Length: 99
Image (cartoon, rainbow, N blue to C red; front, top):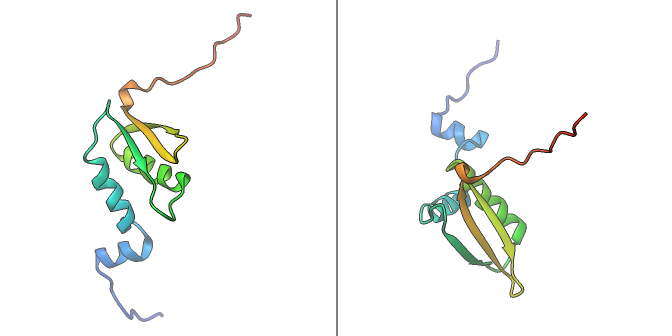
């Protein structure tokens, strides 16, 4: 029979198993709190950041709010984005061929 060595609190368990947000994810959440559907933003990447990593973090934060972001990378290295609500997103479907 194994012995219980330590009993972790819920918060400690969340840190170990990853259900608590990282500091970076919290920063993106705070950033998204300033936005609303219909607004567009221009982001200048900091040194060491990649377009892909920023897009992933922003999309995660937007998804929690049921928003979608549309991105365009500009010539000067900035990232242009527009926020839209899920209600504005139309699901693309293929037309069925007549038989």
